[in-house]
Image (cartoon, rainbow, N blue to C red; front, side):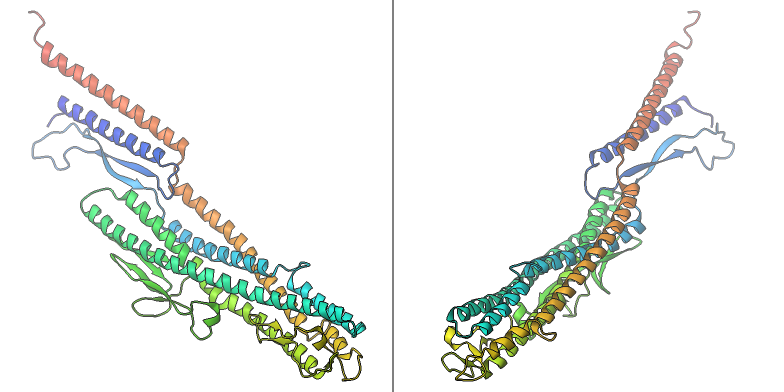
Length: 461
């Protein structure tokens, strides 16, 4: 079979179609240069050959039949995407931990003249003033005021911790709904992608949306993803499957509704079907650790400090005698940071002395010495604040390091899948020149055919 002039028209026409498709894809990339989660696309072209198995005695000129579009490829690296999910999950966990410790540090406000450590110091100084002048009612009144300030500081610290715990629980409950909804979205996209692929339809934008949803799940729960041969993505949280092809499992938050009931009603993030715990990472993992470990530990330490303060002061105070001869009275009421109060309201009932008939101030002196004791509540409080500072600093340092790692991974992802306007402009000019050249070929062939059809045989007439 010899080469045909009409074959040249087809060759030029395929070139026009291919270059136009290239321009369309380039325009799509440029249009989505600022679209979050968009992966740039590239046209794959392939030369069209003539007959691969020509018939017997047939002839061919050996020239191809033009160009065709084999695929519009999504520029995407699955390995980088998987690593990014892991790094974003870790970054989300550490970011929330840093925010948690920052909020707790703000709660205690140490060191400051108005913080609990300074309030304890003022109370012990007030005991010292009473020891120096036990008969002065004004100094005893000041002592009661300073002691009430300490009790109020402990109450406020407990309330702030309980409030932060409650905020976390409310937020985790909202995140549970978000996770369940996003998981449904991933399952629906899986179904749509499989159907579209089987019908020969493009799915690049759908896969971008799915990857974005999976990344969101990774940041919330530390989820990972596994891709099947048919294009379906399964999502795994811990060692359990959240999304399996077109079906999902649901999470739920169960247990304590306040920090004070946590000891008797443990808080659990669990699977709704099996009631087994969810080994979550990411932001939700951090918040669960905060509610089940960090805040309860600090609250218990604060209760221990309040308990030691109550026991120490009450033991000495009950053994002493006040100005009106009273004895056996407790100075503080309550047992924890949540309920500690000053039980005495009358300054004349403050026990200051060791005997009923003397005002020697021995009890007040003993109380003043508690502030400098190596086994007193102040030492325990300073140790708690010191440990809090160390934990916060460590969390901040790990967060800073992780942020750098995450940025590096994201930069690698952008280099692979991000849209570069300079590169797209180059592609646009390339496809434009290709289209113009194909058009010129088509015009030239048209002129040749006009000469052949309309002018051949006219010479000599």
